[in-house]
Length: 168
Image (cartoon, rainbow, N blue to C red; front, side, top):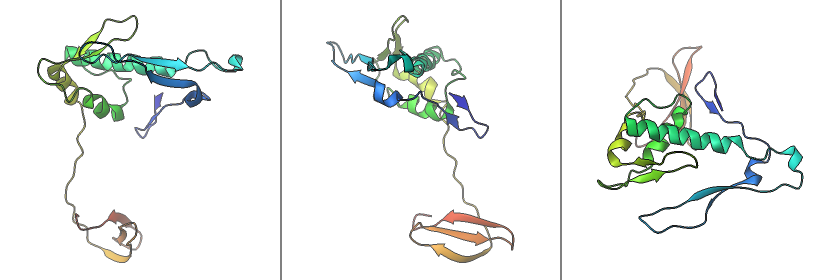
């Protein structure tokens, strides 16, 4: 996984990743709602061509653990957490009420409890979209009604595409 200069996060998965990796929920244990997840790696007929364990799954679990750990300590988020995932992580536990908790317990690590209060420390890092009204003066020569787009010409050399509709 690495960040492109434009801020886009690129995750390169090994060949046949989707055919050989499954995230399984096999049982729900007694208690409030314990749902153990496990990674199943399908055996290959040609194991010498594939890695035994996809490193991407372990890395994703480590990033999730570090992110929730930062939330429980009200610390900065890990740098390797892609920005585009912060809002997705912040959604986890949004239905929790005071006194309830969600636990993350990967193998060989101390379990972490996500509560409504320490979840809020993650929510504060979510970037909110910014909207504003902009007035642009120019000439519109054509509009694409099917895609609800038009192009406005500001000068002979400069134009801008924009959406239109009842709600705009």
